[in-house]
Image (cartoon, rainbow, N blue to C red; front, side):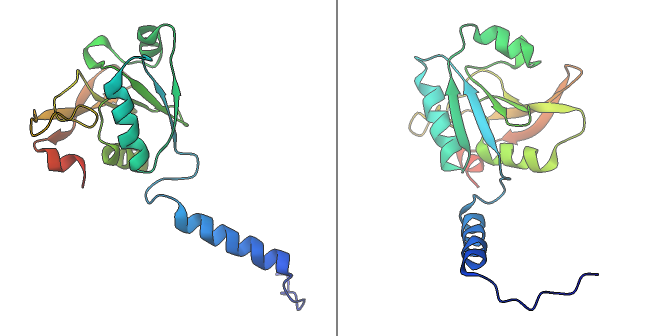
Length: 166
């Protein structure tokens, strides 16, 4: 074991340490460094923009892209037509989040990383889901866990609007 130095810390070392502490304190809780979502959407879709705001408000760093063929992109990421919605978000490590998935469930998924899963999906565009808010209207919906083999199962059932924003 190497003995500790008896040299005093330089101002540079102290400032570097302080900056690291400040950066950690400002990082959104539950997100690891590099938790960026690239959101692929049509340039004219307003509800996608509202969902992006929801993701950003939850602490995600987002990038937006407008691919020429969104359906081909979805297929390339293993999202079956029955699971599709209007936009697709892809994490820095390749997990997919299809449609109006509540941000807190994306955080939970990224923390758990279920074995054999490729991501989460909210098929269609349920009224009242993040980005699809319409006053007091709300339709119950399910968030599906998408598996590598093409299957899916319920990851979370959203019964009330309040459950989307814990």
